[in-house]
Image 1: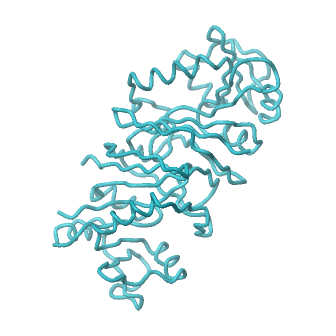
Image 2: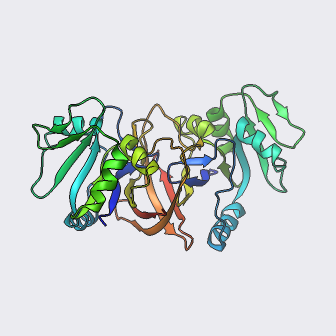
Image 3: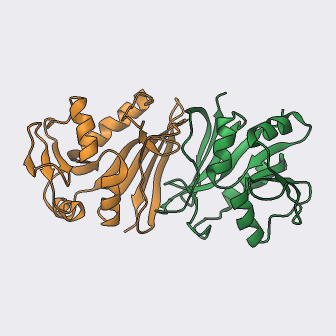
Length: 175
Length: 175
């Protein structure tokens, strides 16, 4: 079955972006680059919420990359294929992803702030969490984790400090 | 000058306790115990907010431990020595701690949820952050970090995975 990973970068105070969506605080490194390359080799599907999609569209990178399908979950956009190449889904996210995991394909990545992730955690369809914790307290921003109706237990797979002070952590979700 | 550390344990979604103050999710280990022993050897002063103090009083451990002074910051309690042995401070926390750091003594530990820590971060008096990140998303609880008026840059000193899946991270605050 396809593995679903909630992944990206966060601040130590668990923001995914500044209040305006700004990502200028991200620290790039060869170590993070190598890890990302490995990760994307195994992924052919990206899931995001409508807000992350809109930020991505503004940034000019919300289209269909070669070999990658994008699904955007929204209560307000029209369902179906969007001009950017992404497909808008307006039905229950967890049910959609549960079905998607059964289909043939590579692994699936959940991107962006935590509203979509909350629905997918509560629906029990996320298998891994992988974050590059940055050495900064942003103080304000878009939260990575939102309040949830239940506790999610994790198993640490890896914790790897980078030379630039980031710490990459990878967890398996205990179902 | 005495070093001020904001430290303790947190969940991956950055809660310090359950909504009711519950800490039943904490995982004890020999590794964490050895680290705590080392830490407390160098500390003779504990700072906490009123809410953490009240939880500690209920738990029966808010008194003065041998060799440790406790200060509780509050806008509602009466200032001065409390029956438990702690001293209640009602003046500006950052100014008080700035003065305390100049006095002779061992290092200082800021405990508890993040309301006091926010005031001390904003006042620039916290020198280190040391947390044992637990492999769990609690989903709800007492937040460790609150919104702040400015960004705080950190330098990673150490990231150490424990056998039980906790990851201990220690940062120096860049002043």
